[in-house]
Image (cartoon, rainbow, N blue to C red; front, side, top):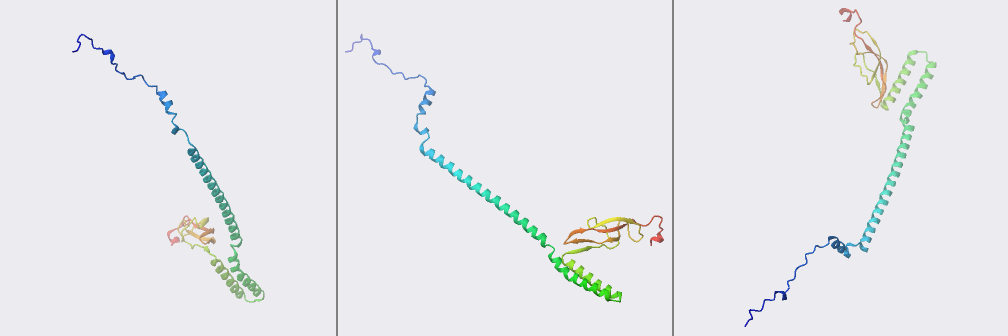
Length: 210
């Protein structure tokens, strides 16, 4: 039989209360820093050293290639300059060779002129030498700039030295060539000196222009 008069001893059983005190975050972080995995290892140091050595090797290779490229460029410049000098020295070789027969024939023409009694013989001989001389110049690409009267004036090929009235040639057209020009392989050596027409003279009548 239970003694109802005996009070219930609630103090004999104690309930455990969980610890609700705040945790120090700084302390937790500091405790986490003790993790050996966060500290650099010998393997990491070896890998870093290997990368540095690799970069140094690449730098040395690039620098060597740069020096080689500079040397090649310098050699190229010297070779081009030497070739230009040689070309300049021997550029007239073909022309000189083509003019040698002209010089020889001109000497023969002079010798013949000293004993000739007919002036026409001298004219014929000199004309032949002149034609040979022109052929030699044509062979190296020399072209005469010799416009005909009435042709258009081209400032890239002609040089106007004067104007003169003309009833036959329209104004600003070429009236006369006073000096033939020349171009060498399409490049103008000297322009042709020309006189341009200024049109009919002042006071000219239609009959005089006909």
